[in-house]
Length: 418
Ligand SMILES: *Cc1c(COP(=O)(O)O)cnc(C)c1O
Image (cartoon, rainbow, N blue to C red; front, side, top):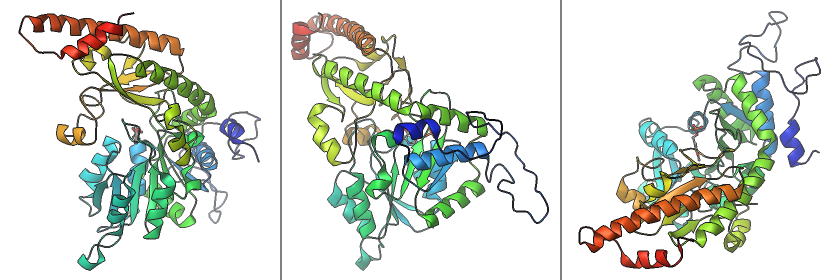
């Protein structure tokens, strides 16, 4: 059988053309002719199935070691179709640090339709087990599913997919993972016991910030049938041209991810040594490699976050980057930077945000495939501008107008401007 990199490039042919085209055609036809009224054609109507979408669905199923894949118009459409397999009254335990749009979908829609959504720190396996187990004596049945993300965003904590799936299964619950941040290149959660894998293919799989897409993979027939039914009836399918864009993105996933990880590590190490940086969150650091491997990941991915020291305004860093775009989203060839408290996570109330560790000083980077030295230079010059702003405000402070921590300035003075 072909190995992973070969699978990325070739996928599984759907035998749908006889022209010899090396790429699968984009079929825009929404309807397909029956040979006779009694025929059961492979395709009849594009929402129910389309050869271009079939190619992508088979491709992702193969890469995730599943049996069936499903392509949706966005990551959130994929999550909608998965959560729609549950019934009113079902309890779903959700990691407490998941993608904001997913959190909002659960709490604005699924709770209204009777699902009971409970957040728990998915790193705390004891708390997770207690939540899944429920309390039979008080009429709280075990949860029907646990939903989590492989890496939390933006703090990049590594969830233990194998351990979480084991706990879920002990109580008859499904384990559902959003594997967007790591992709099957770094982890194949179905192999670790997870039941449903979801992707926002908008990010690493498509990889070029030019298509919104969602994918789901399972390997149990009963789940496949239910999710197929939801895909066809809720109707949030991915259009043929977009299916092809994701297919093409997937072909270069390994190359992009390798370079992204290399660059991210170089930047993380630069930041760790920088006097204006207080903490760096990146699971791909050598110091974290044991934990990473123990949890079944082959790498830390291409996203990191860091906090600037108190006194430095993170906006002064972000507003002065020239190469990094100041933008939300992640996983593409170009590097992006953002301030979670004002951008990706602005909807979270400040108190809740601080409780899970997303401070006002936290900056998130999605690292692309540029030259690491250029990215580091860009950060360096932005830090210098931010440092000058800090110095200016400290001069004002010494005139007694504002108050900026002197110790920060001393540290920064020692080694920042090189
Ligand atoms: C972006 C993202 C989503 C939502 O995907 P869309 O394609 O934007 O609908 C879900 N989960 C994670 C982890 C994401 O990063």
